Image (cartoon, rainbow, N blue to C red):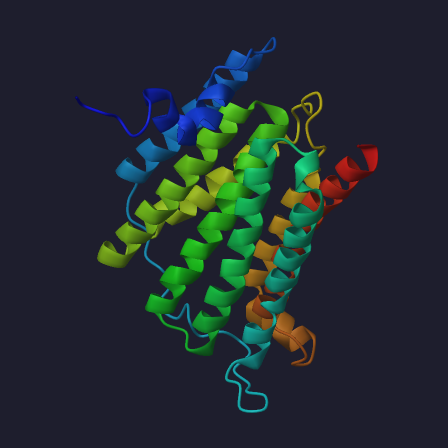
Length: 275
């Protein structure tokens, strides 16, 4: 007699949260918003396939602050990654203490975001110790994990849980593929489109009402911090000279990007206070 160690239903248990989220009831206007979301994803894919390749600047690794401190090479750019670590620790503490007060999907997206920040702290610090394309590969991969969590959380607070899962998974896959393309061909276009398209998504969602009973995440502040970080990144040497060599634009960018976790932490705290 044949025996089965587990029933078909038990085998489906790992994907039940995703299936439940996809099949949940929809509110008025949801399908129009979902069409915009998935249509935007498809458009980014088409652009990545059709647009001309974009090369990384030749001197990308030549950051403004070349100083060492106590034997630590490129100390400013390395130590500024502490901001990511602090944000990850603060988020992990909130999840461990109060994670039970939020929905399962919200908890997973927050966890993915904070794990991504922790990975970024390590990968970015390692990259800046000895800036090379190999180190930058893992730095960007870690950023992709945090990006997936943030985009998934943004979609979850405005649209629905199913779209949040699909967005997070699509972002993780896109990050891996874009880094694979860059590593083998030098074409940075897919990564640029992923970052730019992701921020356009957040900008759009900032004008969409927060779902009932969802975490009240201020996406406007996320956009503001990200925009300032990009400006600092492009003004690396200018900021270094303006501050008299005290801090470079790239080092300051790390602290500002880490500050983008503040809206998530604040929304978590507000949710906890209202529970």
